[in-house]
Amino acid sequence: MIEVERTSKWFGDVVAVSDVSFAVGPGVTALLGPNGAGKSTVLRLLCGLTRPSQGAVRVLGQDPRRDPDLFRRLGLVPQQEALFEGIAALAFVTLAAELHGLAGARTAAARALAQVELDPDDRRPLAGYSKGMRQRVKVAQALVHEPELLVLDEPLDGLDPRQRLHLITLFRRLGEEGRCVLVSSHVLDEVERFGSRVLVMAQGRLAAEGDFHAIRELMDNRPHRLRLATDRPHQLGAALLASGTVVGVWVSGPGELVVDTLDGAAFRLAVAPAARAAEARLLELVPLDDDLESVFRYLVGAASRSPGAGR
Image 1 (tube, rainbow, N blue to C red):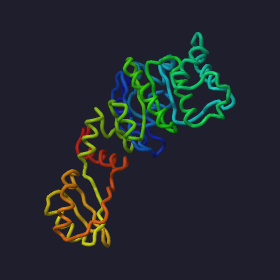
Image 2 (cartoon, rainbow, N blue to C red):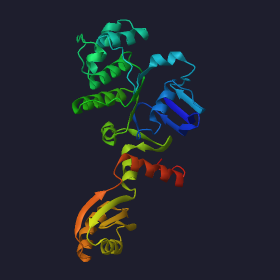
Image 3 (cartoon, one colour):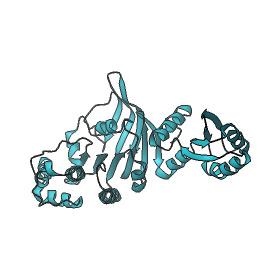
Image 4 (cartoon, helix red, strand yellow):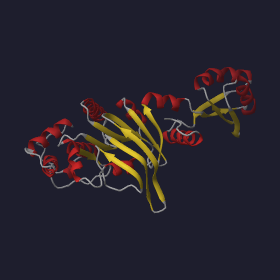
């Protein structure tokens, strides 16, 4: 339903997307990456809001820059907010339905608002809505015409935990109905809940793609970096090297040791015996690379070292 082939997008000297290729079918696909990874640019390319500098984009078999009829089959939740502040949610979503040429636009709008657990009879203007409520209004206008393809840019931002769970369940149900749901996020736990195929973006490139669990396995097998606070860093470092559970050790400051390990479980079992053998006090153990930025830096490095790595 989506085909992106050797596609790049640059703005002057800034390369936002570099030589990206992927294909997406029915179901939920998550576009995962840290802020600035190029996710929003990819979604704008798919929706025809910008043209590729290089390569080809096909959506439902059409060119999104040349086939306006495509927009009736596509629903978009943009990351940016551009709501009509002075009108109620029902009027806003009804307007979206009318622009799509729906008969019974008001009824369709009420149904879409109910899908995201908003009251169609709420007469407050959108200016009085919370960020989470405004996000759900954006989702409702994307759903109102029952599109075959949904493109959702950070749709869970600003929602409380219960509403996040509700929308995740809704998106999964739409995918099970045979629609194509492409949803971007920079939050790993959100993507895990989708239980979906994942495209990982980093620094404008496609760093990995496939089943979420396979990518998590790749992430879990990356070198882990940890900082240890100890009164005998040199002796503890030597003991850890002797244990065979670390691949790199250096003293980074007074009473501070940094280690790299390929096997986190084995390291956790070895660190206490190594401290005893070195007669060292182990005061603190802090992971240094458990954030998403570190994960994606690793994935990009792996991809550059080996063509197709992470695929």
